Amino acid sequence: MQRDNVVTNKKTNKMKTLKLFIIGILLTLASGMNAQVSVNVNVGAPPLWGPAGYADVRFYYLPDIEAYYDVPSAMFIFNEGGAWVHRASLPAVYAHYDLYGGYKVVLNDYRGETPYVYFKDHRGKYPKGYHKGEQKTYGERPGKGNSYEHREAKEHQNEKHAEDGNKNEQHGNDKHEQHGGGGGGKEHGNGGGHGHGK
Image (cartoon, rainbow, N blue to C red; front, top):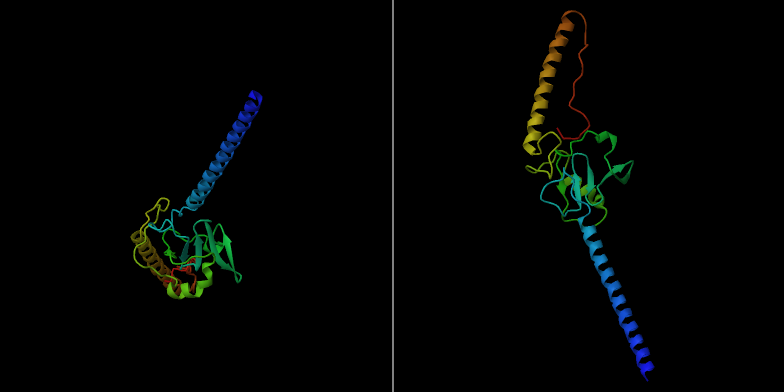
């Protein structure tokens, strides 16, 4: 009889141990799932050039270059040869585009994976050069400020420089014409391919 009690106690202890082991595994799995959810939520912090105050938005529309930015994946979405592509950087034509100074339209009303299905609407509502007031960024432009006023001051400085260059160019052309040189002046432009709508 004592042996039967010992065997029964061993079986009971094994069952208790097995139950505790299973409960431990379930708790571990449950906490792992919570950790996975919080990792997914925290991945995809806005870029330093992103508009401040919109930490949980998924997409920006960049009207000056007619492109999108997917915050969680840190990918630009733009039309390349008739197809929308996802890339870590902008195409070469926009290599010098000022992401800090360019206006970002926050698409906080869009839920989905393909914001470009509304591209015609976005382009119509937010044309190149679109700006709706000052837009501060999360971080500062490396070596410079991050405000709309800074960009406006820089553009004014560039326009002044272009005017001065054009005056000098015109003066130089006059000299050439007086001396029979004809033409000869350098062409100045504000192009740069950045689509600022000016």
